[in-house]
Length: 109
Length: 116
Image (cartoon, rainbow over all chains, first blue to last red):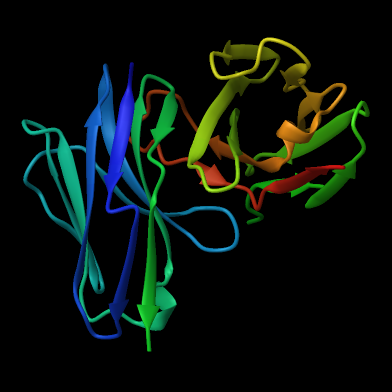
């Protein structure tokens, strides 16, 4: 059965800290891995990763995929309170996306 | 350029009633996906539709749930005889092409269904 597992399930850090969120997967017909940020509304797209070893960056966020070991990490440096959210990892296979349960990140001021 | 639109945003139904959730994809998008998010759980895929076709309904409960995406008009997720366990946030997403390299799905704001 296809699965996407995220860890940790929740994380509390202080503003300015760096965090690493993990995502491992076992999915047939893998096409790409996606990261989303979900606050009190719909998920918003962060990254799509298709190739191993190529880091994607957007401001303080970065992500990388390892297709051999079947995992991805999402890094957030110099965290801010506005980064508090649920971060969802998802794998796109065939024509649907399989989501993990998310990591709930809370940034303390 | 309007994003994915869903309505209503909040829907309250009593047990046994019907719930109809609507989704209008982004302009130019012909692929619609429905997801359900139960409290404290991740998003779960329900169904994937193209215009007038159900492509994959492997995530749909076998009974009471149905979905359509007619040639004209929004996609509809219909839940008959709702039960308390149907209370959840239902998200719709759209994408321009299946199998495209650019396969991000753009999400609507969701419909929060509460069954009393």
